[in-house]
Length: 81
Image: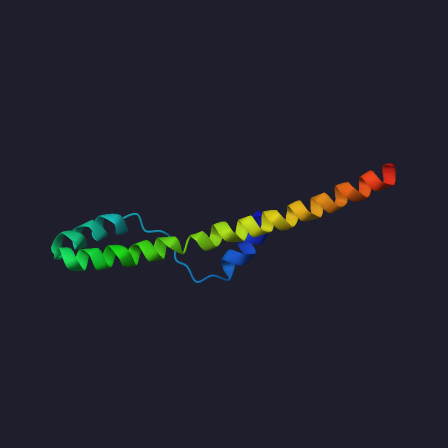
């Protein structure tokens, strides 16, 4: 799964996480009026939700592996019987 994830991830347009970004984000929020803070927060929430794509990728990969395993076990049991 790691290999498949690495291949998939290499095709994604992402940048490494910057540890200072949270501090800068908090400073920015402090300077904004409440309405703008809410808009920015909602926007960030949408960005974080896109991380669900990675979870979905692994889920689907696991389902495929499970179905293959089921088929293999079924074949082995038929050969034994």
